[in-house]
Length: 398
Figure (cartoon, rainbow, N blue to C red):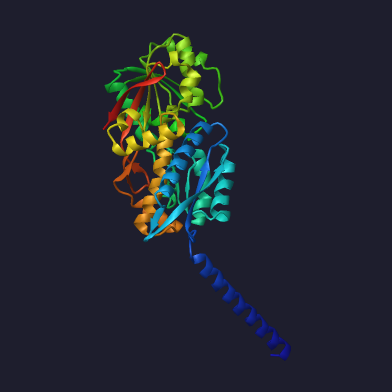
């Protein structure tokens, strides 16, 4: 072999060895997954619908999040292996957009280096953030994403960094079906569901599967629709005993208003998307009677829960209004993260995820919570009844 050739071979070997060294460094660097908390604060990100179609839910949740963080900080902070650390909230608006939700998540985990995220409120926005939080190994607790597959990968395995504080659509839908049969004695039902999201279609599917009476008609509406009279008129001609209408308050308020104006006075049953004061503002007090919805938090049921009573009183004093469902769920979400940190004695994101997966008998304002293997909370469910726009009754469903 010529000297020149030998030199080239040696140079190539040196390059390969150097590349190997740097590759080893790179591997060592990426082997440490997640965001490590340093200093005296724990950064918790908030990826929330503060504007856009779901802003009502997002702003309610923001209030619950801020209240929980302030309480924890006023009490000294979170105990991390014997050292108290304060919460620093980093709040960003995803504008009820899946694209924005994904970019907000990337900012929170990569730039802000948060240890955990609360939000988003909706399943679609929540699903959009999953690739970014998974890559960064940072857990997220959604207060209200209810699609059954939200916490699962396509292969059926659990998403390691995805959690929620609410129950699934199939539980809500089946509960509503049983309530219609056993309590309302409704034998002929029409279904009118929101088909613009997994939320409405998932609830409708679960209801239809569980309902034992006759479904005389099934129709869909889309987010942003304003005129529901044609479908409601067709329902009226079919001698229905009740309507099951899963969706969000923006459309459901109008559906209730137009149904009552058309002389349809049968019960209208919905889901937790109706559990917002704006529903009655849109429908009108006089129209919001014989209205029922499944909810993870009922102020009437909560009066028997000392943890919930304390929360409701503080919420009333701070915001001068009765605590809504979505504020309660978000409040619990922050305290679940606190519990996970204290149980694991670490505020590093990977450890927080492990702690969230192990939560058992957590004393939340929405009831006792145990996280199951799919990162879904096992917890109680209630149904609230509206009469003249006010909660007049509640049913604690076992």
